[in-house]
Image 1 (cartoon, protein in one colour):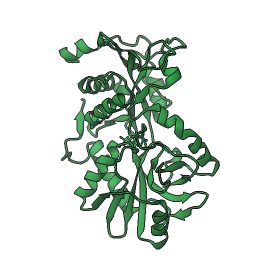
Image 2 (cartoon, rainbow, N blue to C red; image 1 turned 120 degrees about the horizontal axis):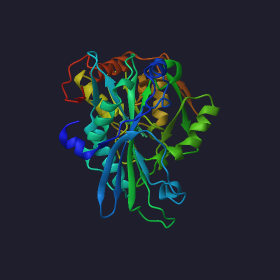
Image 3 (cartoon, rainbow, N blue to C red; image 1 turned 180 degrees about the horizontal axis):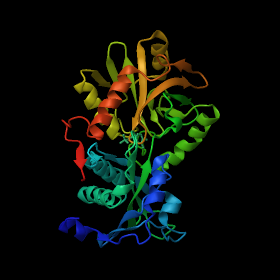
Image 4 (cartoon, rainbow, N blue to C red; image 1 turned 45 degrees about the vertical axis):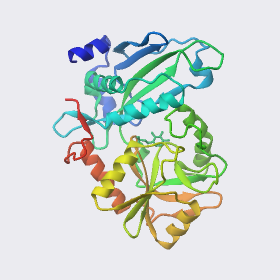
Length: 365
Ligand SMILES: *Cc1c(COP(=O)(O)O)cnc(C)c1O
């Protein structure tokens, strides 16, 4: 740690880290979100004192009063990002400044104390440096970082909390979908919507996920992997999946994705792919796309590929779409060519195999 960072975070090394042999065994096949590292970051906030008591310490349970605000009114936000192993053995974050900005916006939407963006980036960088041995090096594997913030005032009255804990935990991960399926099947949610205008759709908060789970359970019952949500007003325009943005590719070589109108989470993968697609010479439109249009275009062959994207699952081809009224296949039902090209372009930058013309890589060591 540099001197200024050491002042921000008190470092208390975990006295009982997992043995190297056990860690290596876990990293062989980590799955997603079940293998955790030895340390965590915490920073506290209280009205009057502001942000204070930043620490990197052994990962441990929180001790919280049952009347803590977060348990009752869900004042909680989070981020998801990855530290990537580079070819030369080093490691890097991908656009951490963009996560820091989004975290700040999410905090403001949920009336929480915004964490200074430089403190966010520094906290993630330091945790990765401390737990660097947990970054897997297999293809597609990474160290997933989960910064989050909870309200910690003890009160059943309804108002923004006066106290918060910001925390970062890290999890060694392999690929998101079991078995690395070539394409996912989506379930069109006609009973449930994810976000309405003026709601919290563009904030990354746990509440959005809680609200999506009944739809996800319905999808699972119908034999589909993920839900595709329609807009809450007309129930007509395709918005996004429960935790991923969506793109459509046409036979004229153009790419389309729904616009950010407040009900869609502004994905950093989404934003990066728009830039990379333009670099590759594709025309990109951010325009609404109706579900009936999608079905007609898939059936006529005008639509050739579709994919979902996000930090966790990277780029995932969409093979089939089902619903009470819908049942159609995209292209051959497998992974499309342009989708593969875009995915490779992104992963090559993230893993240091390609130049980084947009300055997205934040090298840590
Ligand atoms: C996090 C998230 C995404 C993807 O965002 P990335 O920054 O690309 O990881 C998309 N949709 C929702 C609802 C999300 O929570």
